[in-house]
Image (cartoon, rainbow, N blue to C red; front, side):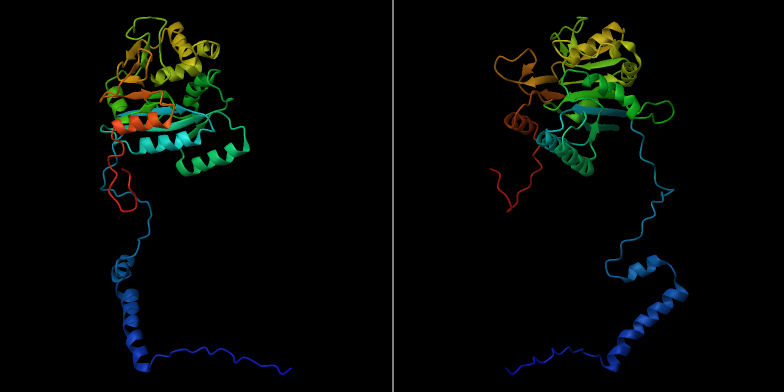
Amino acid sequence: MKKHHLPAPEISFILPKASTTAFVLLPISLIAVIFLVVQPDESWLQSLVPGGCEPRRFDLADPAAAAPPEPELRIFVGILTKPETYERRHLLRNAYALQPSVSINARVDVRFVLCNLTKEEQRVLVALEILRYDDIVILDCAENLNDGKTFTYFSSMPKLFNGTGGGRPPYDYVLKADDDSYIRVDALAQTLKEMPRDDLYMGFYIPCKNISDPDGWMTGMAYALSWDLVEWILESEIPRNNKVHHPLGEDVVLAYWLRDGNRGKNRVDVNPRMYDIYYDNGPCYSRPFIPDTIVVHRLKDNPRWAATLAYFNVTQGLKPSKLYHIN
């Protein structure tokens, strides 16, 4: 059989004329001479390029620029949750990210607090969250609701965070909150701004409207302790020896620590600004929404979350677009 050879493909180059080459090279040579001899400042070269170039960044502080003001108030909000509640954490991140900025000079750090990870999927998926958001604290404890997690949380804080210098603690207040609670951060900061910075125990007190009852406690929806009480929980034998074992839960146990240690004398009940979302036959702290809310609790499902976020106009910034239709 006769073999047929395909012709080799032709590769052609268009060579510029001599006059064209001179026209291109002459201004480039002129710029190079000026750059090397007359003006070695690289910022000048950037000005020659249309739109400029991204300047190199050396992270040198501008001596004339004023340093950001030191926060007058520092608040740590720990949302106690479980490793497998990925969707709830995603919802909470959106809900908090879309809140208005805090209107006072305050720093509020919101973190999710977990105990030890026990499954391979948790180690991978929680690691993804940490890489993406860096908002998770993993305590050295077995995951539990009423078996010492509250003690581990508060007693770990002084070991995790150092002071800021000048004798000031890293945080003025530490909150413990449930993951079915929605905290309005600016309302919280505005309220704590007016509170004592020591021996403070603030939340919604049970029995309702009876703050003088020595056997009462702040409900677990959310409550705040001043930093000195957090340090006391780490150092005192009273909490260490009485971590658990109360039928009503760990938040009652914490109130008894304070009572037995003669602590938490600045006891503040923020009723009615913390409450459970209203439902039929609810407790005394279940009520309709109010504008100056600090915390709404018992948001156990998406419809309750949606009702809460709609009342506080969280999605009001949504702009019209042909890419979606909501209504």
